[in-house]
Length: 363
Image (cartoon, rainbow, N blue to C red; front, side):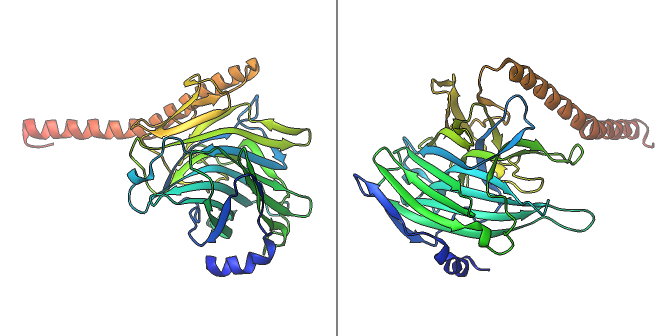
């Protein structure tokens, strides 16, 4: 269904915007959507929530939140018609159909014209199943508002939360403003009646064997853009990611980095889909003092996936992190054995054949 028609269909499901503020924030609806496709080859880099003591522990949470801003950013240096987004990317699941998942995003976007936007949306994904079912995804809703009354350098807290009736409520806030943006009744959307009314956090390994196995990162927070913005005139500050458990709000105590070719939300689908080459980050002790913050920026150096952006002092997790690094090394070694070594052998044989032909005129 075209997005414009879909938006008309969903209007009754979206609550009126309400604002309580000292300085009013103005949100104007627009059809200029940004995150409309998964595996899109948009450059992407992010941190992700890890549940100690393992990279393979997941949990359900009622809400997620992140604070983002664009300090020291001048969109005049962006490529024409490009945009830069920062926000949170969260997975949900289905209670009946095992290969169906839900990809929620809440993102602030700054474009080359200097316009500022808020994007929210939901994709429904279907993983591939043997022998013939190919992976598919569908954009269930996308809403975008042009934002005025906030400077891009202002820290803005984005919030998405479930209620028991099947609504996801979106809001944004600053130190002086709080805006209830929209409420979408996800459970009443077509083919969504069995959606689990919670988000997922933590991680898991899908069941595919090496080398097709993937780590799945349920709660990610980072940066995406329409194309590589290769100028040092921008930065995106992502800080204080939180999850709402039954016990209350908790900061993400452990965050590692991922890139757009390793940012799976299920076995087949990824946010962005392309690494953000040339983008690095400042993070805890490099040189940031804030334990819960990462500042992404372009300097020509690419942030390696698996970088520990921050983590608590849990000894057991430290040990497991070392084990995980060892397992990664083993995987890379396996790639070398199965891929690189045979190629090297063939090249050696070809070189040897050429040498014999050159020396004797025959094989």
